[in-house]
Image (tube, rainbow, N blue to C red):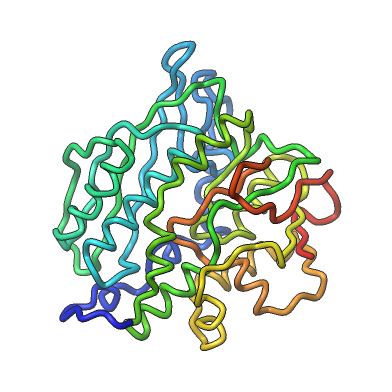
Length: 322
């Protein structure tokens, strides 16, 4: 269906959601200058591998989790935009095994998004206590979130080992469907449902299962985040493209020509380190689709999440798609 918005938020933005991230290669080059020569012992997760949040030990049994995430609109409805952005920011805490405690709004107009962010934060049991706002001709919204975690039970991007299966907790295709929405005004309720669903249950299930390696799948696509996880863990990742779940309507939207620009950048970044076995670009671009508020990619199995591949000893390629 089409929205009835008199003002379409997506038309004020050049990109949308996590698809507007700095290209992964450029970002890694910039962030590399921030890596300290010797990481302090209490900084359990820092900037080295591109983890989803920073983690600092504050006692033998407690660690603070800190993250910030914001982006331009992926929905014309302000409340929906706020819900998606909040779920996406909270996901960074869940992706390292933490529980969100308090969030601060990061707001660059419009004001209505705040109610959507508050709604999702309340679902997470996370306080919202102020924030920072600016007047901005290009709308932006997100949150800086602080959480708590057990320092001995974290989900890390560099803790994968060969022999573990790879599970994905949300279907792909939000980037494609967001591009469709921006171009046509048509709303995918299935995509909104995926993007506003918290990763809380998946994170807790991974911790209950004794797993220690995960990342969330956002702007660098499944291929990009799987590549980062495998590279940081010193293994290779094999993905069975037929096992990857897809949001209803995403394939039709892709065939109609809707695709975020970030997806092609993701594919170009991963390709030199990958074996794609001659697969069609249509398949690879779906796997590289720049997700907004995607699921967790977990090294291990949890109930309800399809297994889409496995980690294997490091080979000639860091990532392979079969």
